[in-house]
Structure formats: C-alpha cells, structure tokens
Length: 110
Image 1 (cartoon, rainbow, N blue to C red):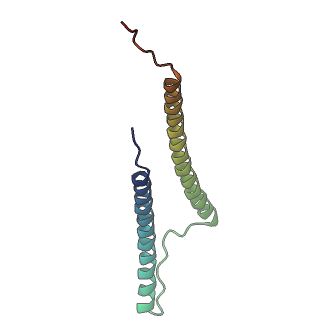
Image 2 (spheres, rainbow, N blue to C red):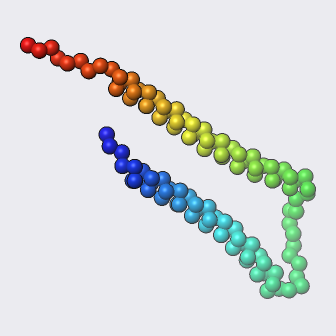
Image 3 (spheres, rainbow, N blue to C red):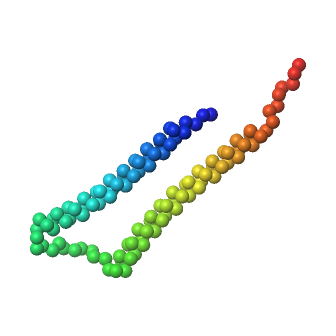
C-alpha cells in the first residue's frame, strides 16, 4: 500500500483553512452586528438605547464561566477523539509489525 504524503498534507491544510475561514466569517458577522449598533447610535445622536436584560455582576461571571466551560468541553472532546485515533493507529502498527515478524513458510519442494 502506498501513501501519497503530499496529498495527505494538502487535505489536512485544506480542512484547516476551511475551518479557519468559518471562524473568521463568524467573527466578522459578530463585528458587523456591533457596527450596525454603533451606526444606529451615530445616526440618532442624543438618543440612549433601551438596555434590556442587563446582567448583574454575578450573572456576568456565570455567563463568562459558562462559556469558558463550553470551550473546555469542546477542546476535551476534540482531544479525546485524537487520542482514540492514536490508539487505533498504534494497534494497527503493532499488528503490522507482528505480521512482518512472522516467518514466511515456503511450500515444500517435490
């Protein structure tokens, strides 16, 4: 079995770039929302927007740590998937090495 290393690395890079672009697009969308909010304030000077559902300091801490917990859970799940892949790869390598170490039995000559 031949492995095309260049194709393998190209695929990894493409996936990484696609994910990075999705992250950047989400970030740009959030900044665009903030820009729209700022534009509305500048278009109507002297107006104060109604602030709804302003969190208390305790709620703000809970929201922040809730988000941090979600990020950590996401990273943990990702890392566990990598670990599982490594375990499977290790098993495959061990099996290949065992197979390669077995002597080749030649058929008896007649």
